[in-house]
Length: 203
Image 1 (cartoon, one colour):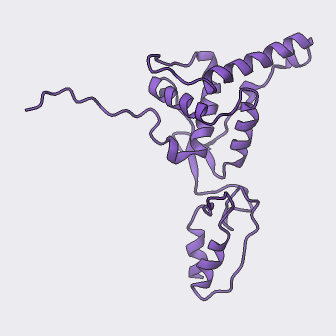
Image 2 (spheres, helix red, strand yellow):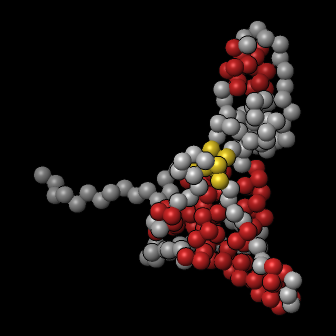
Image 3 (tube, helix red, strand yellow):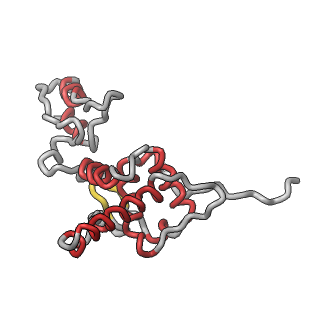
C-alpha cells in the first residue's frame, strides 16, 4: 500500500495549467508500486485526496484568519487593496466572488490557537430592516456596500496615502483579506512585509 500512502501524504492534487485536476497522479503513484490502479472522481475545482473527499475539505490544509494587528498595519492593507484591484472584479460582483472563493477553498480557516473559525460574509448583506422596509432603504444599503467594494477592492492605493481601515469596516476588510490570502497563498505570503531600511553609514 506504499503507493496509496504516498498519494495520501499529498494534501491535494495539483492543477495543470488549464485548471483541470491532475487525476493521473493517483494512478501513477499506485501503479509504480505495483498496486492496482484506481481513480477518484473530482469536480474539477476541489482537489481532495481520498482521505478528505468525503468530508469536502482537506484536514491537513489551513489558512490563518487575518488578525487585528494585520488590519492595523498600513502596508498590509495596501497590499490587500492592490491585490484585490489586480483581480479586476467589479464592485457589483465582489460579494458573489468572495462567496465562491470561500466555498471553493479546500481547507479550514483557523485562529491563532489552531481552532477552526468561519469567515463572516453577513457584514456585506443588507439588514433585515432594509430588506423588509421600503425599497429606498434596500437600495441605499446595496449602494453603500457597492461603494465600499469600489473604494476598498476596485481602487488602487496611491503610494503617498497611508491606508487604514475604519473600525466599522474591519470585519469586511478581514473577510476580504482572509479569503484572498487563503486562496492565493504564494502570491500573498509577503503581505505587509517590507525590507528594513539600512541607514548605517558605510565604512
